[in-house]
Image 1 (cartoon, rainbow, N blue to C red):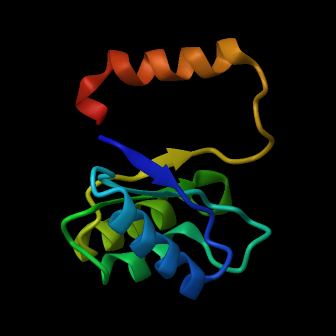
Image 2: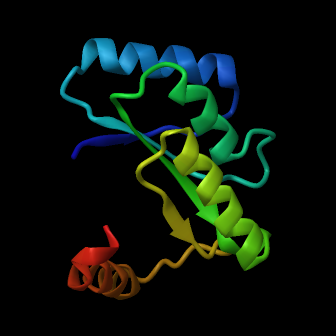
Length: 117
């Protein structure tokens, strides 16, 4: 699966950028949207907007767990699934980890548990 990560600074511009990417690069399967707190548009809002463009593409919002309770997080994911989202990246959030070994360990854990993806 090939995804392009786009930062949702402006919904109108985001939609235009997505359309352009899919036109120029038809082999791209979908869009990955990070959740950036300093921006007005959260990833789940951007994904809800992008779902209206196509149900055939893969839309992956990042969901930050540190921003809400577990119940709120689960409710948000459930609402996205009901709208057609099939993939969600759950992250803790907070400061970036700059260690290459920490990133490798996280990827190894995910790959070691194929039932998660």
